[in-house]
Length: 345
Image (cartoon, rainbow, N blue to C red; front, side, top):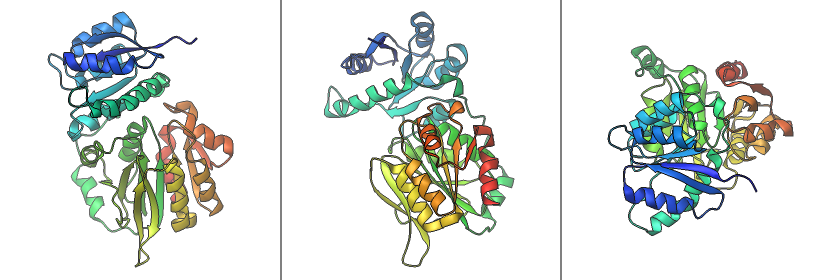
């Protein structure tokens, strides 16, 4: 039998430490090896207990969660799953994901409640997946202080919309998406649509803060929204986003309830509307979604780009598409912007 996954729980609330412990210990493959009451206590326990995964609150005394993440990533690298009630604070969610946490999950609220029970499976799944992360490929995104006047000026200039960049990722993808958009020019004759694994409750705050730090305009994807050049529309994979044409023949977004394979739905629909002016991009993630959609993009003359699985935090998504033969270009993360530009030029 495989060794149980060792988990350390860091939260200043005694009730939450007990509640999360009880949740995790309902799964026999997980072993809570300790708890800590704040970031400083957590750093000491990480060094002493050597957990495989840490669950981490944000709002704590002495050392809060964001400060703890910075120290953990440098001093005692270990996968971190944030469990926090501060999901509506864009600065917090954006910063945590920028720093390289595996996921940011809204903390269960109330007592031993229906909400706690509904959260149980997601928390267990996130901890299990986090334990298999390729930690060497986790890197924080270095950001500018904000969007400069020069970057704002390129947002307001007119550029035609000719191409669509359709990007799909799952767990740990937001970190890579942030890095890509800091380095990709918004003057390309393209819009971008992104499906990534992020809780819908977190998405609006995350997008608002994201928009402050990159030259692209970042928006939450909305049903019926007409696509505009220089705008990146972000959707949680708990919805199905597809591309369509409205009654005026304008390309627009359609949102529906969750489907089993939202990336395939996005890629296929993008290809049907933009044909050979479609650029599909597949990043790090868990599962086998995206390969079929990539095949449709290639059938209609578009380009498909996959992040090299060797530099993915989770290699499953890209590796599956590569093995299926539906990828036009395989590049490491640093080459992604140039690969997108070359596919449009």
